[in-house]
Amino acid sequence: MTTVQMCDLCIGEGHAAALVAVGRCWECKRGFCDSHRARDYNTRYTDWCKGCQAAKASREKAKVVAERAQREEEIRRIRECMETLGERGLVPRKREVHGWKKKRFGKGYRPGAYETRIEPDEPAWPIGDVKWDYLYGDGPPHERVSSNPSGITRKLKIVLMSGPNDALKLAGFHREEGNDLARDDVRLQVLKALERLVSDLGA
Image 1: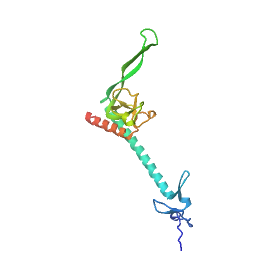
Image 2 (image 1 turned 90 degrees about the vertical axis):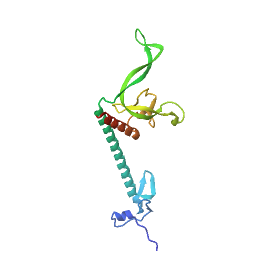
Image 3 (image 1 turned 120 degrees about the vertical axis):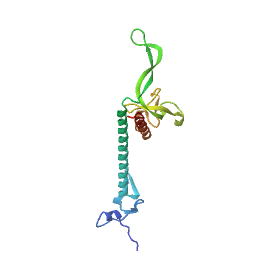
Image 4 (image 1 turned 180 degrees about the vertical axis):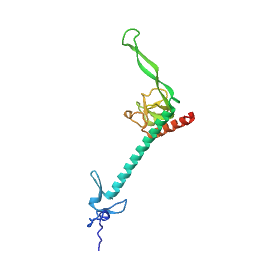
């Protein structure tokens, strides 16, 4: 005589009449009925139960919340280091500005007279070498990525310590994402550099 497999989840929930199982979960090994079958949009799983699907979703949500909290804590510590340092450790920076030369007399610009001048830029705390990528250019990405001395400004922007920033972006980022602390490795590098600076300066 063949024994009919009943839904273990129905039994566990205390239903008086458990439904017949239509599958067995690969994760918890329990039999489940169609109402306890895991579903995802238009997918009806044949070997996964709703309970294990909900548990996985809960774990993933908890992981995201924990990672966000860790990022916020690291950024808070970065800001704290900046407040402690004040003006100490900031390195002056310069940038190249390209444009047409102005007329010596009158308004407007002199056509054909293009110039490059050096202007002061926002100072930054050095954080060591960071990988940057060229915004333009062909060839494999590994040939276009380079490590350059970089720093962080008070506005939490990662910048090159020398040279123009407009032709480069942080490696692994699209231009619209900007140069911020979204990358975990860069954020940790910034935090370690600032904490070391605080320690070295006795702040």
